[in-house]
Image (cartoon, rainbow, N blue to C red; front, side, top):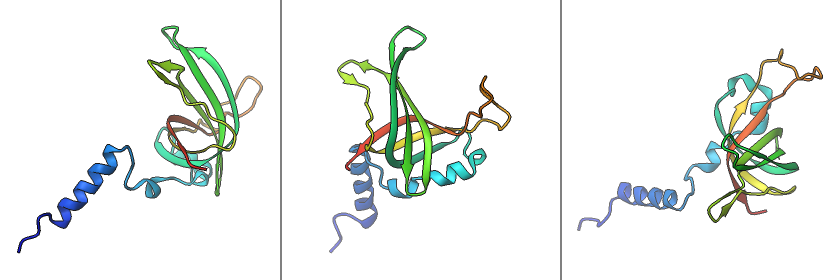
Length: 144
């Protein structure tokens, strides 16, 4: 008797269902430890990474984009068991019924980000280095 569904077809169905629900089948394998980015930022410069951790500091403020639409901007520090990194998240405050995510200290998040690792010789007007920053593109709040 022939099986109604092969193992390969069943695996494909499981993957499709996970993706349809917005989950990544390999999410845990794709998470980059924060210390890996901080120790060798040049290898991650302008590259996409997925980071997972806890928000330990957050500052929120508003602004406008180029077409004068309101932006909600949050600067925060994300910490995992290997280290911490400065991060920034900018999104339109409201698009239709959907409002921008507001982070709070203690939130556990999964974050897709682009790493910005400016050259060591780049300084602010006060002579301070810019440091490594994770520019968040998507943030998902996790259960605590």
